[in-house]
Image 1 (cartoon, rainbow, N blue to C red):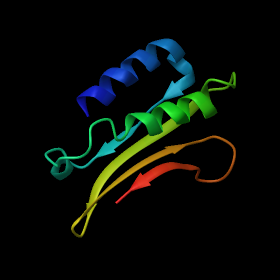
Image 2: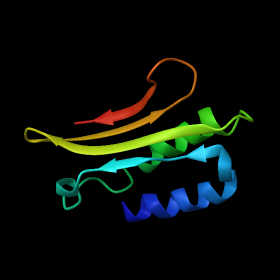
Image 3: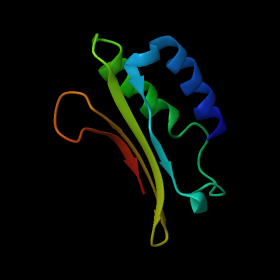
Length: 90
């Protein structure tokens, strides 16, 4: 999460008011070990494909939660389509 947050700080500086990134990270997921940089490519793709090309503001939502024994990670953007899911892992 630390690396992702640093990356998002850079992108937030770049896009300023055009980029909103709410995160819902459940506390019990913070100590879960996952592959390095598993979320950053998904977020980067959402920014590159859905935020950068347009002049309107955009939103990318990042969620992490536990469902039973699985860790569920989601990256959603508000690009064309309904409830566009950029990526999800369980």
